[in-house]
Length: 224
Ligand SMILES: C[S@@+](CC[C@H](N)C(=O)[O-])C[C@H]1O[C@@H](n2cnc3c(N)ncnc32)[C@H](O)[C@@H]1O
Image 1 (cartoon, rainbow, N blue to C red):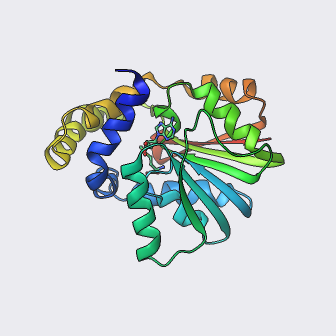
Image 2 (cartoon, rainbow, N blue to C red; image 1 turned 180 degrees about the horizontal axis):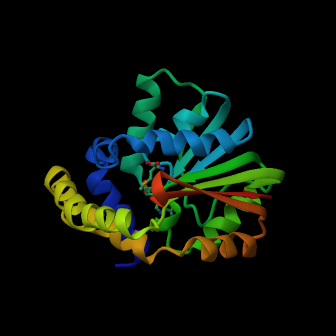
């Protein structure tokens, strides 16, 4: 099975438990991480790729109209339900592949992705697509897990992340692979400077990054 198909099936399989596990396994920090990332975005029309159940899009919707896109129908169905339940009428959930977006060049004031870029098959292609659909001067904001520095915090964190989290995730989602995939994919993800290099190569400028919560996650910002 190709990575794309594997990822799509994996998220379909855990979609019903995704939000609950996200909040539980991050001890509620995921909301703060997204809020920080969203605060950097401009207002206007924003694209949220790999939007999943739409938590990032909801935060963006406070001051912008949002297209929440994802390639997994099961995650998107939950996204749509959530918008209806919360009576949010400025978020539109649409199916789209992050590596081949169906939007025209420069259509958006900004683009965002939270915990999604690590999962796409061709990261460079997805970054180039984000850059392409954002107008000149707009921003791309990327929130992703990182490998924390610091020996003391690192050893406790990795014990939790690699040994405890996969067990809790598997028990609650009733899927074995997905929560082992999480630490494996984070360890395989490019280091901060390598990722910045990919952003530059996709055509973004003025790149900054901000580590949050001891470097567990990093928010990358690029100008188009
Ligand atoms: C870890 S979830 C993140 C969801 C959400 N952004 C959040 O903050 O919770 C990753 C999402 O990326 C989506 N995804 C992975 N590869 C994709 C691709 N090539 N195109 C579109 N969506 C993709 C998955 O379907 C999944 O919903």
